[in-house]
Image (cartoon, rainbow, N blue to C red; front, side, top):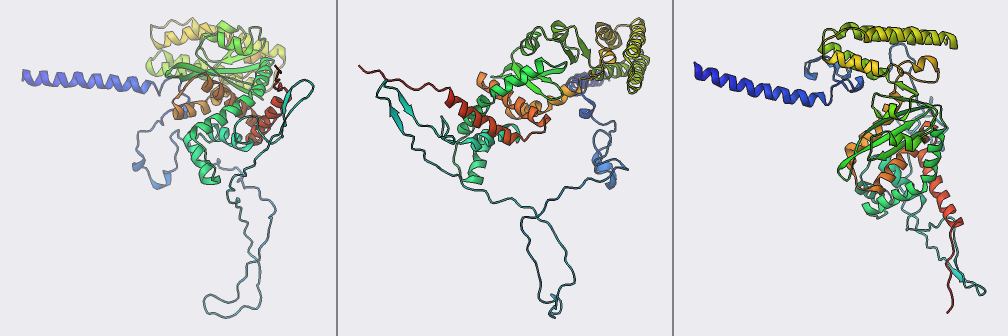
Length: 454
C-alpha cells in the first residue's frame, strides 16, 4: 500500500508540473493584454459536437456576415467593353429549329488580360565630352533608370508583393517568371524593394513631419528580431498618417526621436513606462485597464466590485459625452470621475492582482480622463493596436530582419502603404509615382563626371 501511495504521489507531482507548464504557456496568449478578438470562446464544445447550422459560428461567439436588418451589399457593375450576341439555332431536346429569340438573358463576365511578357528596351545612351572644360556628359531618358536593369513597374510590384501580398522574395521571383516570363532572382527582388524604399524615404520623412505637428498621436510598440536579437517596431498613428520605426530600444528616447522632444500634442498609449517618461500629456488606454480589471476579478473575489465600478465609470462617461457637453460641463465630468477613481484606490484589499490593479489606476490617475476634456482624444489606443496587426503578421512570416538595411526598408515601405490606404490612395500607383519621381530627382542633382587633361 505504501509503495502504491508513493507511486501515485510521484504521478501527481508530475501532473502538477505539467499543469503549471501548460498554464505558463497559456498565459502568453490569454492575459489581460490579449484583445477580446484573439481570446478563445467561452465554450468548451468541440466543432464536431455542434449542429450543422452552427458551422459558421466564430470563436468569439459572433456569427459571420451582416447583422439582421441590414441592407445587403452588392458589387458595383460597370458598362461592358464589348457585347457578344449568343444565339442558338435549334432545340437541344428535339432538334426543332427556332424562328427568333423570345428574350435576352444578359450576363456580365469580368476577366483580366493574359499576362504580358516583359518589354525589353535597349537605351543607347550617348555620352559627350566638352571641348572647353573636358566635362563628360551621358544623355538621360525619362524611362531609363540610373541604376539596375529593371523598370518602375518591376520595382513597384516587387515592393507591393513583399509588403502587401506577404510573399518571400523567392516567391516574388517565381511570380514574375510565371506571369511575365521575366527571370530574376530572389536577391534581385530584394534589391528592387530596397530601391522602392529609398525612393520613398523623402515621403516617409514628410509623414514624420506631419505627425510631429499633430494634436493627437496614438503610439504602440511590439517586438521584432534584428539579426536574431530583440528589437522593437513602433507605430505612430494619426487620422491621416501612420509611421513605423524599427529601433533596438523600447525606451522614451524613441518617441523623443520620432516626434521631437518638444512635441506638444496628446499621446494615446498603454501603461508602458516609456510614455510618461516622454510626455506628461497622455491618455491611458481604457481597453487595457478594463481587461486587467476583469482578469483580476476572475482571480480574486475583491476585484469583482472594483471591475464593475470601473466599467460603470467608463460607460457613464461615454454616454454623457455623446451629447457633446460644453467645456465647463466636461470639466465637471472630469472632477466627478476623478473622485470616483480615487474612491476605488482608497479601498483596502489584500496583496494580489487587485492590489496591483489599484496601483496601476493610481499611477495613471492624471492620465485616465484626458479624453473627457479634449473631444479629439480617444479613450482607447485601439487605432495603434490595429496599425500593428500588419507588422505582426509579417513578423510571423519573415522571422527576423537581417541588418540596418532591412530595418530601413521595413519601416519605410510599411509606413508608405499604411498612410496611402488611410488617405484612400492606390498603393501601386503611388509606388510608381515615388520611384519615377526619385529617378527624375536623382538626374536633376547628378554631378557630371569631370576628366582633367594631363
